[in-house]
Image (tube, rainbow, N blue to C red; front, side, top):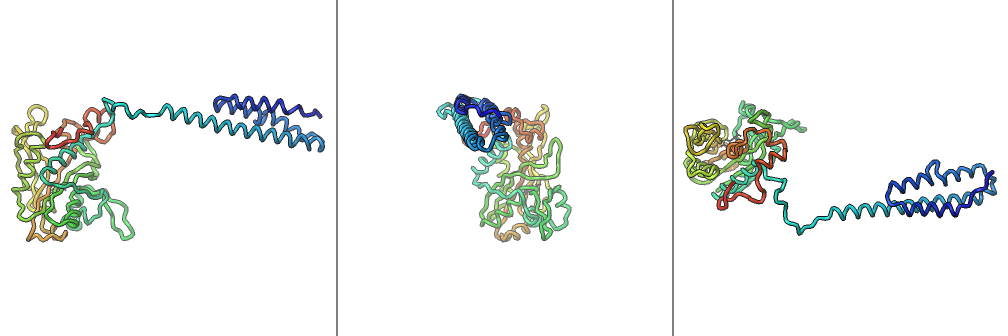
Length: 360
Ligand code: DAH
């Protein structure tokens, strides 16, 4: 039976190798060379089995002690190396906050958000506040309170996304329009009311001019003695400002919406002759929104007395307006999160539109 070698030089050389390891890979190599399955210390420990009980009594604790001290030194060194690596990384990631901003920022305001901001500035200047409602609506706010009769085909007209039914069988919907914000506003506020409600809406549709999620702005005015003349003047003024023309000529065509009576679609004058649409002049008309006088049933449902108050409402699609104003030919890239596209069509986020400072 070979006697154990002197353990002291082994310990000294192993500890020196641990201390000299300057990265985690080298340290791991030292651990394997000493304590791994075929490591120097592990092989020595294997010899304990062949020793006499007397020999084992001294060699056992000596080897165990060596193994434990080595393992401890390795784990201490490992922690120190990790801390060094972290400190080095933190040092390289330090930001100098005194540096000027990048001249060409990657982020840009999406044209849809820009149009939201422009219309909020225009209507804000006319005394409108901005209201909001939830994207997940119940049937009551999205349809019933807006005077859509139960089972009426107008409900189907909207290609609604329904959520799973709850225990009582009621199915919530992804709102198909921003009109439910009219209801929420009339229920929670007393007239006079003047709001616009920008937001996302959802319908089962997908082609070059339709996406399953798109954006609308709803408008609602409730007061004594409001009539359709106010509606037309308000919208004509707003769109003249939006398209930055002196006076956008407009016309109303009769239409049907369950929640307004009378209802109309509004067109503004445009020119399509040069291959692109120019708003404000020309021989053509461009349909831009639906509108009308709020239906007495809708007022009554919301607790507003139709004999004392009237109101007008309008709803417009923002995505198409942005396409028109900023010349984007296709709707689909709006939602592809392509940085090159946003850079090209986007806006500087810190240049928010104002009616005095300019819109676009
Ligand atoms: N909610 C209608 C839609 O999405 C748009 C609309 C039309 C809103 C007329 C109105 C309105 O407020 O008066 O098709």
